Length: 317
Image 1: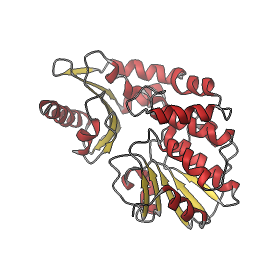
Image 2: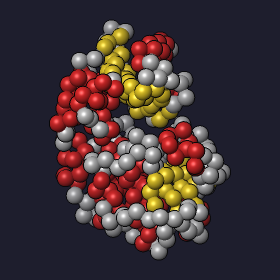
Image 3: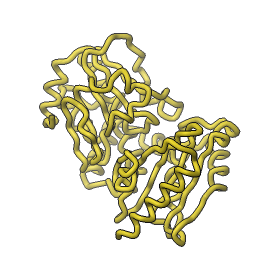
């Protein structure tokens, strides 16, 4: 059931013992919106906890400063930045069919929740949260603003992507007025790389392959690379943007081998191309500029199927 942001706030104000769910392979938007909402709910005297199938890596740990873990059985379940229940990862068995409110910005949202507020025009869920949290009667303080700025900055590529609107800049400016340390956040999110990330990036660049006279670029990250470099999931974040940055590339793909029979794909496309249309063919989705999907097969077979689908898509334009 689609509801307004105000209706979502009124419903949430009546709830207690709230679980806030984030998606697997978490990014700054799902963690930023989750931590900001958790802070707001706790400030109202409610018990609230952010849950994710993956641990919080060192890159995003600051978003949870002061949010000590609370133990309780959830009576209300909210998802943030989750387009489909499949993205819950290991949380899916426990929470599938039990999500009462979804706040999202993905056009590919599968309408799985009892109540939903989905705004595809928002650059990030954190942009939505900037309007939502005051409806709960909670002012956006510096801590909440820091969470929200992080989500907006990361989901827009530091305000470079096509999803940025004038409203996005206005929200960011107002967050800065709350005292957000934007230079430090931007440096940590976009300019700082661990030694493991550098080694992984070097190995991944050695795999780059071009198709369709350079219009398609593919990078592969194997299990062996992860093991040899001791890279974490945080270290793999950001590599997905490399293929798209190559001159002449229309569609850039990064394939990450999770197991022998599971490959995760991150697809990136500049305007006017639409990555989500391609990923939807394989049960995935996302945004025109950034989308994802998964293949339950080996890396080479996944690459073959994906490149063929991208080639067919480009033929239609």
